[in-house]
Length: 309
Image (cartoon, rainbow, N blue to C red):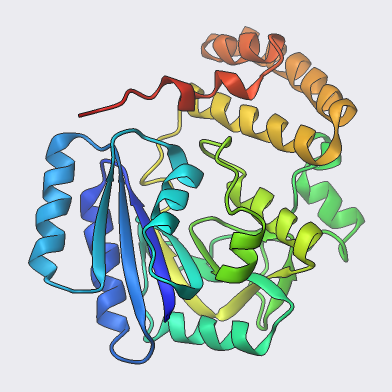
């Protein structure tokens, strides 16, 4: 059994993926046993061939490429990677648009998890490409969070809602950490069934950390003395389609964890909000129509992904 299986998803951003892999290989040499599983999420042929060639050129025995015929999203892509992992003690789910600049990042997280059995997920502190602070922790989605907004909750209830914009100087418990880097114990992850693949994009990390807490009594921690760089947004472009996907995932998550009436309250709030938004910004009208239809997860772009040869 190896120590860590690292899973990275590529989708039409092979240069980021290859740079991420190189940073891992350069900073982890013989200290722990690990492998890297790269899942190509049905990229265009040119990008896939570039990725395939780049991986072959690295000529590393612990690096494996898996090709999906369909874009199955963040959770689905990671679960495909899990199916190709060797038996291991930990999974490291890392976005391809990240770099690991520090020596032995995996080893430091491994040591922390080994010493803290009550932790289910941990993450290093995220930095931007200029090595400046990026928010890494967040609060579970809820009706109050979406209606009152995070800053108000952090001001009114600072013990329950930690300030996301603080650079903490010691390991800190949080509701969840960003999905760009999640380090989790294999036993716990497998016991709860891993990522919910009904979610195509967004809220997968929140859902996972919440289920680990509810079903396994395992907490999530930020480890600030370990850091990584994230070129945030490089792999996911922002537009109304993605905004719609965000709201579909949010409402699915709310209904799953809080029930029908919480979902209904938030749906009504969003319907009213985006009705007025659409008047000022007409390109939001398709999003409002989806909300008016109930924003069922079946409208996710996951169900519109073609199967490629």
